[in-house]
Length: 204
Image 1 (cartoon, rainbow, N blue to C red):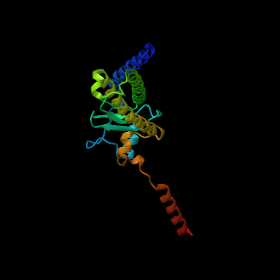
Image 2 (cartoon, helix red, strand yellow):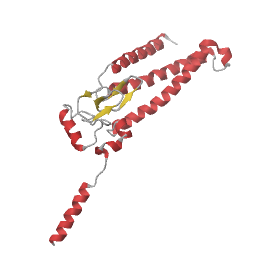
Image 3 (cartoon, rainbow, N blue to C red):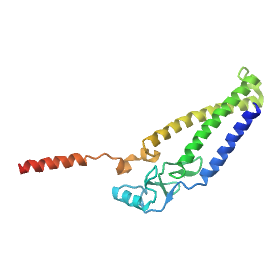
Image 4 (spheres, helix red, strand yellow):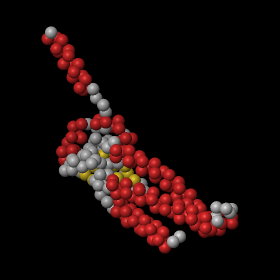
């Protein structure tokens, strides 16, 4: 690898480390609000409207939706999911940082795969058996395969989060949508129209 390639790759790794430290210590959007003691989820339109009135940032991209994280035992505004890799919730305040980190991981792993392929081609690792490669060759091939697998599911994960952003829905809301009344369709307008027609017919 050239000096420029090494410099770019090391810079990407350094940025990932800084980003990981930032998201681990970041505030995902913790709020103090009263919720039900059973599962701490918002289950009525009244409680949801009360929480929105308590939150100052109603015009933000994620709105005033507050969800409860069972692992952190805290209410998080714009809660998406609890990330075990970072040990922190992904909410309104750090969702953009999470997306940037996810893209950064994909770019860094793609760079590592390219560098590993260049090294494997130059060292003719792919044309020899595993016993002939030695420790360096086996390490390069195994880590390259691991990076390919990592990048595969991370690309799908990124596509999923882009889908969620486009349709303004969080991962936790998509999984547990039955627990949130704002995602339930109602026929109140149709019912009201039918009542109006019935009343009009009685008058006639």
